[in-house]
Length: 122
Image (cartoon, rainbow, N blue to C red; front, side, top):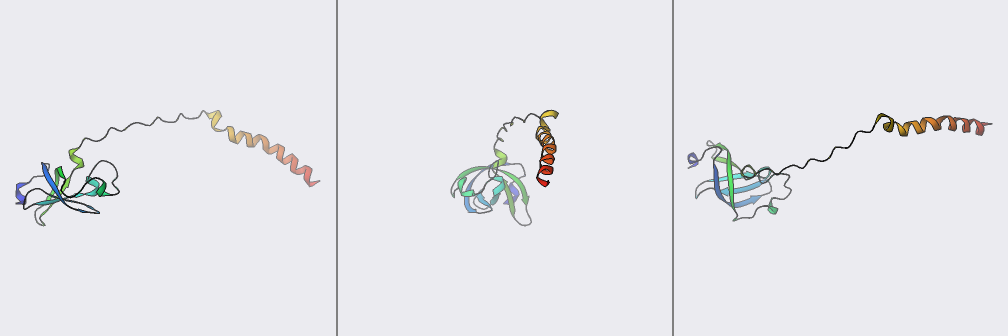
């Protein structure tokens, strides 16, 4: 029955089991596939239970088929549009004078401190 499926195919399935590493999805009465935790949604998934429960109807895409071992890898994430990334404003580069301001202050103070230390030695 696994021969009825092709890589890239988008299908409806039902979550039949959940493990820490992914969810098993029944594609029909005889065939199940695995949605790895990294393929559940865009972004990091710490706890798969926050996204899926047994009995959920899900849309999945076939990522790979291992007919020899009778395994199908599925993705829910591949059926969803990636969220638009908001660009963070880049920090303005400090001018050359500003970037050395802290060091110049120390440089200016160095002579004063050296003079003070000579005073204490006497």
